[in-house]
Image (cartoon, rainbow, N blue to C red; front, side, top):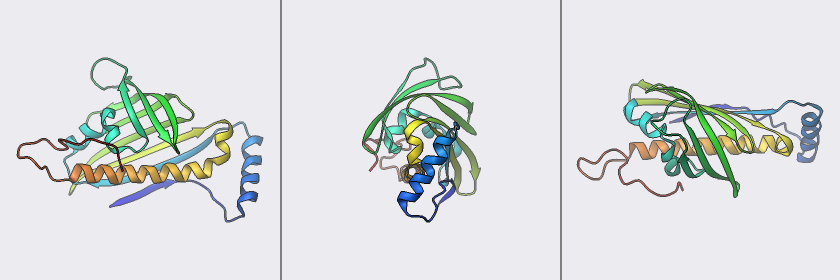
Length: 195
């Protein structure tokens, strides 16, 4: 079951042209950034350890995160606070390169990260909790847009929320699929791009 906890895209019931004009005026009268909050909660029928180890290894993102095309770890050593990654993704057909860094890391409980480069500032976190039936995983994030991207904030907010829900659905399916070979570790043999 997937529950969306956040998605703050204030879309008024007005003709599109009027709504865009009003949004444009509000955005450019202010020097503040536009924030979009997104989030999703799922329960994965797997132990916390397995879910944590898979989700917090960004090199697995290519399997379940629709945005991700390629991820490369830039920092030596194990994943911890300060570890940096270069990620190449795609949004609406546009290639988007970003560098991001892990800002919090508590094994089997929580991981948070923030972008250092890219067209938008993103701060996000995963939290993990053992519950009856497996692991409750919450992903939440905040996206800040600047410049012309602020004009299409309502559209982008819905796009990011839908993508997050699709990612979490995909993750749940992948994590809960039966192991096909005796003795194979969970998720053995996964490859390819999300659908």
